[in-house]
Image (cartoon, rainbow, N blue to C red; front, side, top):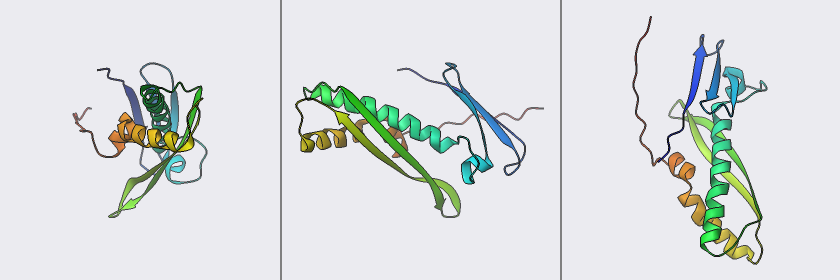
Length: 143
């Protein structure tokens, strides 16, 4: 299977520092800060990146599931909301809400919803945020 890579660097303290991230593919890069994550500053944050990954992954999973059921989607558009809250005193991603719309000839609403529900359960990002992944860490102190 394919492994994708991204890099993030944080400089300074949590409240006053800032970070930069980039995809190894060069497809995207940006900056983030405490204010863009927990405040009202304009800019991105890790939850927005998860939402973008989830929306795009789910749209692909739904296209696959529809095709397997014999439907040829013309367009699937998915919005994702990724919420960060507090659990046991720690910042925690508490919820992801997906909202999808599809233009799919020949399908009825009930079938579309059923196929979408199955796609949600099979979407790799859905499975990851549901806790179905291992996180490995390698840590090295430098300087």
